Image (cartoon, rainbow, N blue to C red; front, side, top):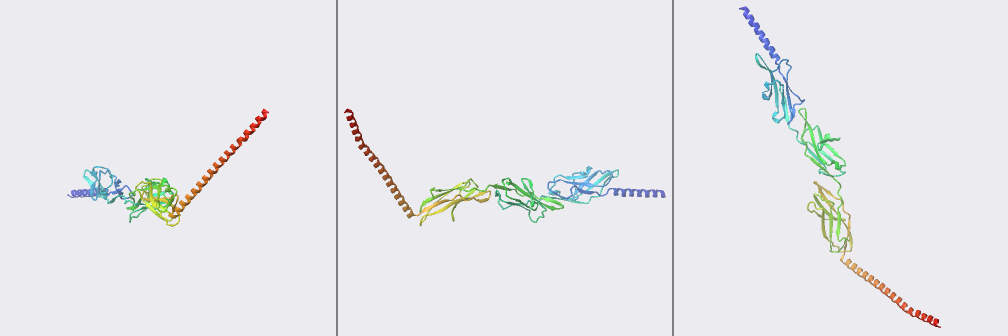
Length: 380
């Protein structure tokens, strides 16, 4: 009887030893994320790995998200990796894993690993791309400052600027400022910017800003300025028509007619119109005076209003009524004098021709007498 009890006691000790050893062997695994961070962007791939130092054959693994098994039956696989191909917000959570072995005594599972938090976030809100000055149309030779403005409050570590997708680098570009000095036609393009902000030990980029188009033009040319009548001499109370023509069509063009001191009138014609004309009644109650007139135009080019250089000036003379009559009288008198001179010249020419004819007729008999004397001498 004693021997039976001793054998049973030894058997129990061996069984407890084996169970303790087996439990020691099925140690808790570790779940690891392949990247150095646990924050992922929507659309990225996430790789999780269940790691253990056991040197025996493992028959399967299980992965859990918030204590619910994921992976669609990974227990039948010896793969110790779990992949989220295209991360979504719903994939965020706390992930754990375990492994299991199977032998004659059945299936035994390890303890569950400690959890790893996984965050799935979207790209940060896009920044605002600003031009200073605020318009998008610039004249060659002008300066432009681009500013990338992140929404507040956001801790920004770096900014980047892009010209049609190609990164631009400058001394202040990482601070959200990029400057273009003396712009040329080569700078005409589409520009965007982005920023990066730290979140969960990772730099998270923003979405790109809205595209800002930069449009570069040559300086405006002066307009063509004409008057009718072309002489520019207008009687008091008469009308003069002023014509102003831009060298090319613009989205909107406003014409300005000016004299030496003031703007007389401005005209806003229809879209894409190149010319404008105004008729002005000229009044001058005192003596004759002369005033220089010219025109300019304001062109709207992609939202920016630009004033052209001045046209060449034309002098317009307004002649008072009294002065005009005196001028008529002087003109008539001068015409009469010229007519009298012409008549006198004609008279003297005709008189000279008459005297010449008379001298010719008186000389003819003398020549006949001499001929007669010569004949008589010959006869004698």
